[in-house]
Length: 187
Length: 177
Image (tube, rainbow over all chains, first blue to last red):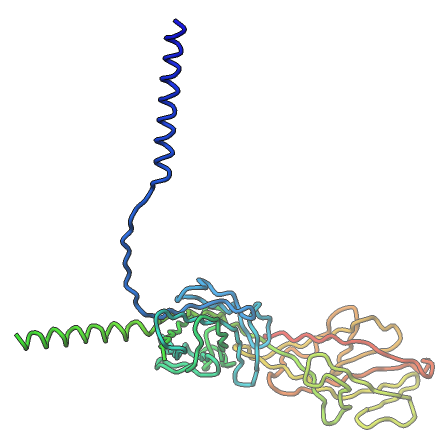
């Protein structure tokens, strides 16, 4: 009876060792092969970022952002990030600052040219400037030596006539929206 | 066969070229929104016939200093003086300029009020008595974008001791009609 018990115990121990050995062996022989491939294509991308000195952009970090000046007037209070560089008898200017970042990959280009245009004619009594360049529906060059991979600040000015609505001035108390198209081209 | 080869190579070159051009430009749109509201602004200017404002001309926080005044002594140019049996009044022309923007308002109402009560002296602006108790209407039909003279006057009793400093603040409010 004892011999039978010892025999069973030996068998069990041997089986355990074998299992253990098999497990150890499996852990030290793992291997595999990956066949990787990619097509390295060149390109650039543009995104708008909020500038610390400007209004907070909607959809910042994308190429389709929004900049809301809020309520603006020649003499009243302005939203944070909006300044009023000038007030004359005929018009006043409100300004915010936004950043443009252009990233390139796979190009030998070291700089880019930034152009902009209005998507549609400016609303009555309003004109739009980027870095002092008055925008129209035709492409205009904003910068010719933009550096890749860094936020570059640009002034966005709204020049607003002081005339009353119907007398050449803009509509009041209703949001006026305009879209500006930007294009970055590798130099 | 040769033609086919040439056409194939040309097509390949065209594809590479167009791909390269497309990849070196990037576009984005920034949508800009603003809501314009009408506003008016008030500033004080020195009037040619009155004292020059001591400070703040062209702003909405100016100072008018009459200097030393008396019932019968010498008086500075720009000050108009009148005397009764019990007091004397000194006044100086002061221009108020109200401008409007983005507004169809035809005119404005101008009111004034003393900053602190003065139980001794009498103050007036544009011929209208001004106190600390309530706003006084100086005009209900002010003209925009034109300097309008609203003389500031102080009536001082003869009982006032020599060397007494008289000082107060007059708050003006223009409201678009």
